[in-house]
Structures are given as C-alpha cells and as structure tokens.
Amino acid sequence: MKFVDEAYIVVTAGKGGDGCVAFRREKYVPLGGPNGGDGGDGGSVYLEADPDLNTLIDFRYQRHFRAKNGQPGMGSQCTGVSADDLIIRVPVGTIVRDRQTDEELGDLKKPLERLLVAQGGFHGIGNARYKSSVNRAPRQSTPGKPGQLRELALELRVLADVGLLGYPNAGKSTLIRSVSAAKPKVADYPFTTLHPNLGVVRVGANESFVMADIPGIIEGASEGAGLGALFLRHLMRTEALLHLVDLLPSDASDPAETAPKLIDELKKYSEDLLNKPRWLVFNKSDLLSEEEADSQIARVKQALNWQGPIHKIAAISGEGTGTLIRSLMDFITIQKRAKQAVEAMPNDSENDLENDLEAETE
Image 1 (cartoon, rainbow, N blue to C red):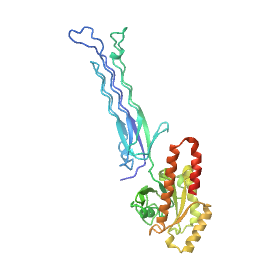
Image 2: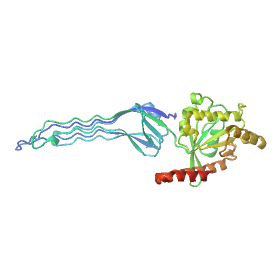
Image 3: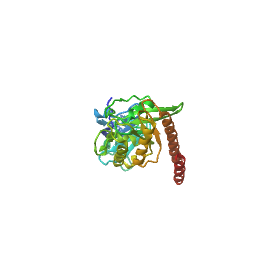
Image 4: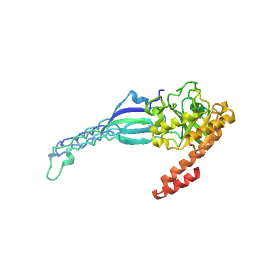
C-alpha cells in the first residue's frame, strides 16, 4: 500500500431539523392549541484514531464528508429524530489543522481518541414552545441551524520512540532489519528507502520500543533536495535520534566532512528536532581494522565537537547492536517516567524534577 502522510478534506455537519407549526385538531376538542414539535439536531463530524490504519491514502479518493440532517418536527408535539454523528477514521498520530486559519484543532495520539471537527446544527423550535398566557395560538417557529463546514489539513506523524537519521546507504534500513521484525528494502544504491518504516525492537520479555527509519538526508534537503526532508516530520515525536555515520562510504566521501552537513540540514529544518537527544552511531565497523575505525571516529567527533553517547556497530552482522538497544531502552524508560511524573505533579515542582533527571541521564 502506498504511504501517504498528508491529505486535505472537507467536512460538513448536518443541518438541524426545522421546528413545526401545527395545531391540535380532534373531535370534541375545540381550541386544541399549538402542538408543533421541535426538529432534531444535525449530525456532528468526528475524527477517530484507528490503530489499524497506517496511511492517509483513503483520503486521496474521498475528500468530502457530510453528516446527515436532523429530521423536522411534526404535529402532536413529536420531536424530529436527531441525526447520527459521522465518524471518520484516521491513523493514530494524525494532526488536524483548519486550512483557512492554520489553527491546530487536535492531535490524535491515542487509539480510539476522538476529535470534534464540525458541530452539527441546533434544532429548530416548534410553535408549541411559544405558547403563553398572552399568545394562545402562536404561528411562529424557527428553522434548524446549518451545520459547521470546515476544510481540514491532515498530517500523519508516526509514533516512534527512536528515529534513524543519516545519509543514504548509511545502514539505517539494515539496522532496523537487524534489531526488529521490520523488513524494509535494502540495496546498494541511494534512496532505496522511499517511505518511513517502523519496527518494534524487543529488548526483554516486557520491554520494547518503536524505531522509525526514514529516507536518507542529503545536502540541500531543507530546500527540497532528496526525499528525506519530506519525512523529517515523522521524527518529531521521538525520544531520541540515532545519527548513523558510515565509516566506509561507498562514494568515498569523508565522514568527518559529511556528518556536520547533515546537522546543518537538521538545524535549517527544525530547531526542535535539532535539540532532541542525539546518539552518534558508527556503522560498518567490521569493514575496517580497530585502529582505522577508532581514528575515523575521533575525526568525526572532533568535526562535530561531540560530547554525547557513542556506539560502534556492524548492523549487517548485529555486532554491537545488543548494547545499543539495551542503552536505548534504559534511556527511553527514564524519559517516559519523567513525562509521567511531570504530568502528575504541580507546575512548581517541574523544574526541580527536570534537573534531577538530567543529572540521572548524564
């Protein structure tokens, strides 16, 4: 199935049913009085996060969604039937924006979470509701209100704990194949990966995290070159980024020169993404001697002025990946506990907790 992570749709809520003007007419009941009922409410439109969906491709073929109108009121003070709400299913991780105002309406992060995007019209009032001591035979009613109409922009951001970042052929797809059950295509030419791939990395019996692989980043990506920039948004939800560096690039480029360029492209795209925790992972260490690999690593560290975590792996054979995923699992666990603790405590204590967690992760 083709991966689609952007879509535009138009949603229209149902109109409220009109109020009814009617009078009671029965034998032996003179001056029966008004008995026109109210209309029913129009159906609203909701978006619901469906864990079984992983793409927005369905919205390429159907862009207009309309909820049903409420039923008009009837005589004998019969109220019209309210219309059912329209539920539109989208993948978990979908961000919803109003195209006209660019306002973010919601972010559907949890399975079965619902978001109201178009309110149904309010029902009209029948003439029975206007009866009073001074108005015994009202002939007035109100029409139902129109439903809300909205143009929506849907943007899918995959939910992953760790994102892979690197140049084409750095070994990102090979790594995710090595540590998870995901089977992205692997080949010896650039841009083998054409869309994000997710893999569940199982560390222990009850421990796992999700890893995301996106197309490689190249110089000029922030200005539209290559495919990687189209999918960088999928790394925004991650807890950490793995910057994969190819110790022996097939194009004979110098990693000490190319690694800083990738960071520059990341900075141009998003400061928030740049400020995420990043780990430096050197791949294809099995193709060099230990001395040559260490020398290359030292040069890259100096070029990046790197002070963070470093791992040396051979993704194709799995060498060093066990230590890497164990360290990642511990880091992710700490980060998630921190978020849960911050959400549960008063605002005054947040800064103290963040300082303690920074000291714990160093």
